[in-house]
Length: 79
Image (cartoon, rainbow, N blue to C red):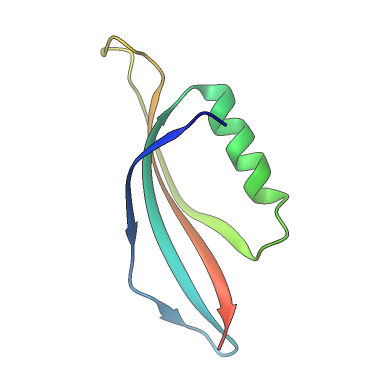
C-alpha cells in the first residue's frame, strides 16, 4: 500500500478463555486513501484480527502532508 511504518510495539498479551489476544501498536504516515485501503484489507482478511484503537492527526503543518496514524491491531491465536 506504500505505507512506511515508523514504529511498532507489541503490547501485553491478554488471556481469554480459548484464545490469547495479542495487540500490536503501529505508527505510520499515510494518505487518506492508503489508510482506507489498509482498514478495508484488515476487515476482509482471513486472519482473526481487528483494530482496537485508531488515532489520526492531520499532518498539514508538515511539508509532506498526509495523516499521522497510531493504530493498535489485536490478533488472536488459540492457546
